[in-house]
Image (cartoon, rainbow, N blue to C red):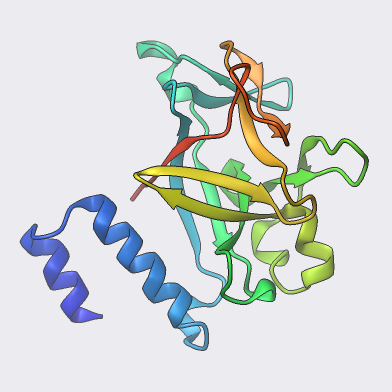
Length: 184
């Protein structure tokens, strides 16, 4: 671990490469106590540069300019240990990990916020399934697929100031591609 910290301090690796490296180390170290239940903080925004903010208890994607940039919600996430190491399963939340994104059980599924502590969810696979997203990354772009509803992805509308949701047929009206950047 000390070697990793020295590499970061030396500036030899970009932040994105180092993030992926650290994520892979955490996944590989499933039995290590420090990797169990660690909650991380990140910034999430869509490829059209829309940030996430809370309005009337809904998570909205919109363009936040100077004075409103403080409204941006940071995403807190934890790796869901109940799913093992395949498909990089994570649970997403806002409000410091106290309000989690969940997929409704109905058809079609809807994205909702539930007041539950993120740290309490990764102990039971069945109970945490609707809160879990499988993460994939290609060329710096991230996608979040629902574990409860395979083929349904976290999305934003192509229009500004619309709620984020789930979609199974992405097109020009919805975006499923995001930037996901760790915060300190």
